[in-house]
Structures are given as C-alpha cells and as structure tokens.
Length: 448
Image: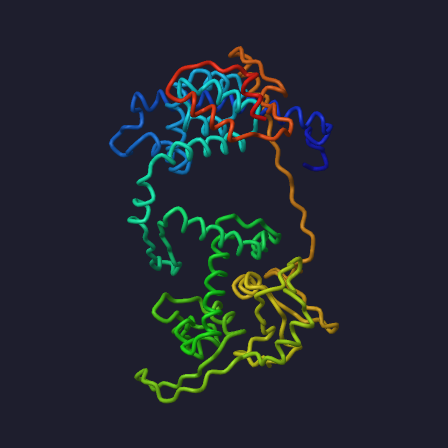
C-alpha cells in the first residue's frame, strides 16, 4: 500500500509457481492433522453438550462449514483411520483432501495401495472418475434398482415465503439423464457472466444459477411451442395482475401472478415492456365493468426494425442474440412512445438488471444506448480491483518442527498428460476387492 510494492510482486513466475505448489503440500499435511483432530474430537464426543446433534453440527457452528461439507469431513476423518497408506501419504503432504475424499468412498484393504498409486500418478479428476466407474460397476449387479427408482419417482413444488418457486424432484436414472441433457443443451444459450451493480463489474454466474436460467428457458420453449400449435394457447400463458396506478407510480397495490405469489412492481414494469396486455375496468367493489381486447405492446414491424438495428442484446459486453426483449427506454406507463427510437433490445438477464438493478438507459444522438449505474458511471468504464495475498511461512515452520519435509514437488501430480484407461482400472479394482493383494506402482502406471 502507499506505493510500497508487496513482497509477492517482486517474485518471478518460477518462484510464484514453486511457492504455490509447496504451500499446497503444507495445506495437505495441515488438512490431515485437522482431520485427525476431528476424528479424536468426535470419538470423545466433545461436541455433545446437549445443544448440538453431531460433530458435523459442531463444525458447522464453530468452524463455519456447510453442514453437508462438515458431515463429509467427519466421514473422511474416520475413514482415514482404517486406510494407513492413504493417511500416511496425506500426512506427508503428497495427497490432497479432494483425492483422499474420493478414495475413502471405495478403498479397502485389498484395493488401498492400487488406488493410492493411481491418485499419486493422476489428477483429482482421474480419481473421481475412476471411483465413480468402479461404484457403477458394482451397482450394476443390483437388478432391482430400476424398479425402485420407478416406484419412487416424484416431482413437487411450492412457493417459498419470498415468492421463489421451490422444486423438488426424484426421477429414474434414464429419465433423469434426459432432463440433465436438456438442461445442458439449454445452458449453451445462458451467459456465463452477469453484471453486479453493487460492485460495478462483471461476475461469473454459478452453475446452479445457470441451470435455473436453463430450466426457465426450457419452460419458455415448451409454452411457446404449445401456444403456436394449440387453439387454447391462453391455458399456457403466465398471467400477471397489476393495478394501473401501481404500474405507473411504482406505489403499493395489486401486483401478483395469477394463483401465485406477489411480484415487485419493477418486475411488472419489465414484463409489460414486451408482453400482451388486457385492460380490465373494475368498480370500487372489484367487479369487472369492461374487459378490453388483448393487444401487443410492440407491433411486429417495429420489432423487426429493432432487431435489424440492434442485432442482439445492446448491453455492454453481452453477445446474446436470441430470446430478446424490447425495452422501453421511457416506460410506456410513464408516457413513453412505442417507437423505434424509444426501444432497445435486451436479453432477459440484462432486461431484469436494468429494471431491478436501478440501471438508467439513455439513447445518444447517434442512436447508441448508454447504460449507467445508480451512481452515474457508465458500465463500459474500467474499474480496478486490488489483489489479495497470503503467506505460508508459519505452516512451513510447523511442519519442519514435526519432521515433515515439504517442497515444491511434494504435492505435484505425477500425471504428464497420458490417456487413462478407466476400464482397466475398474477391472483391476473388481479383481482386488474382497481380497488383500499388493500391487506395484509399475502395474498401476499401465492404466495411463
């Protein structure tokens, strides 16, 4: 800070690489000691004070771990006590927690050394894949699994207290695989980044968020297809009821999905930028007096002209060219005209961001839209971010005192890009499971 360079800034790339890999070894060894402490703590039931249910709950409370991750830590900690070779490799810093976690799912006395050799010669991905194939090979013998899956299939959903839809499903393996493939296909059209107004920069979307967007896209396509082929298209439309004064003045009032939860008024304003509208006149008792005809906000000719002009989402950095909305720069509820100069094409994500993220859109005299954050800065303005760093010297001192020698090669994977023969690996594991037999490193290397 204050113009003084951080010591890390003066390191060469070779020194950076050496320190990163060496620190990885120290972290592996520290992780092993931490797991040993957890196993002993759980064995003595140090967490049992009448308020917590398990050691995992204690880790969740005291160490800030997610409960599922905490349960996995406890499982691995106890499993390592029965796998001395794997435990020793992790204690010396040679084996990462990711690899140890995967190995402890299937390793036993007869397969431990072979699996460990695979882990030391391969990456965590190799280990996870081999373990998964091995488990699948053993499960294939359970002929009744498909019948149980079919009997237990179900899908349920409900609206949570914040209005979000919660979906819970359980599908047979084959049907589930088709759903996953459909999600993956839809995810190809979902952007990987989104603009975070709070910090003023692009952030990467999580896989979970992208899957949620992909599921919504699948539903949209299904309804769009039915609306084009069925005379009863209204049955497959999402209807939103909003009071005129609520829409115009952004004040409290009716704004809700038909037979569903309420919506934020800004969400309704976003939807009404580009949707079918039906005007309904009611008396003071809420009884309908007159129902107008359904009209489209954007005429087809203007929509075609907008798409020809914009050729995709106009938000800075966005490359989305399909499933675009027409956004009114001055909302029609505020008197904005449905004219080409008052419209701009936006993808669904950025249309939502503009309305619900406080983004202002202005059309320049040259016909180029400008997007401004709530603080007035433009989205195409570059914002610098300070880098964080850490020091691993204390870990190194601790392991030196314990007689554990760790250098930049300790945690390095021995894999050099060779192809891995998973079929051979599973075959060897199936032969070894259930009987003790030592397998040399030379034999295990043949899998690559």
